[in-house]
Image (cartoon, rainbow, N blue to C red; front, side):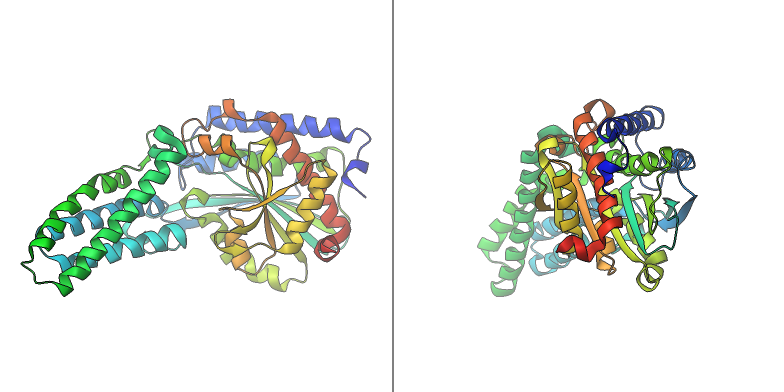
Length: 408
């Protein structure tokens, strides 16, 4: 059965569950507000969603995990301190020694921000974050499992993004990167040239020109002006929930496909929720004999930017899953573009579980992302409606065809 055949008024029902999604995320934004990773607000939002799922799921549970959420953006402060120390050492003519904090800064940023590792987590307080999981069982034997996942936490405001958008963000990155290169060059010259070289002395003082770059890194994130995450975070959670709600309200149940909806925590702290889920469940999924597909739903904001990610966080997405999403787009009368971007699917794909990402994040989403402007008032209902439709179509396609048939 195709999704459009599941109800004689399918299109109007999609609009109805779009209302459910937008009302729900508005309620979370207004009544709970920003939801930092590992905070009471994050858990309160998870509990709110669990109550919503109890009306449409057979099982719900919240899984706790330990994490150090402040380490992710805290790595920027650590790098700023290390690079400031390197600059001071250059001014003091300790050029070779200055290489040490500079190299450490690169390791910290590469490990925490790019690899989503846990290089300096031990330096930050341990907190408890949570993943919410809701299951609607198959009516018969479970042969397939579809996991639709969004993330519940929201990010501190990225000050450069708020003040200057993409342009200022790029400037900060380039400015800081040039500082790393400059200190590296001065350090190497310190090996080659005499310590009392006039050239080195001048270069050491010039390194002070990069101090503003690291001041910008140190004050990069503002908890005071945290984002509501209405678009960047909650659209994914509620579009996924709308699929299960639609099926339950109309007494629809797949015969052989188990539908799972998940709202992860600590995504904005380095995909920690997705990693915790993988750690707890990857072996059981890989060895359980049930074909499983994980679809990350991430930022549903710009109607003209309907997208499937082929890569996320350095991990290749499953080509069959991407093909299935593109077919779901065709059934929903849109053509999904291909791109790459960050999402929880990166952690899942690296664990060997088929994964893909549906997103609708274009220029407007980019302007809102991780700023105080990412609020319920800037949610685009038309985009959410199309996202709900695509995900319902994807669920029915997966039940009907599985991954292999969808790829043919």
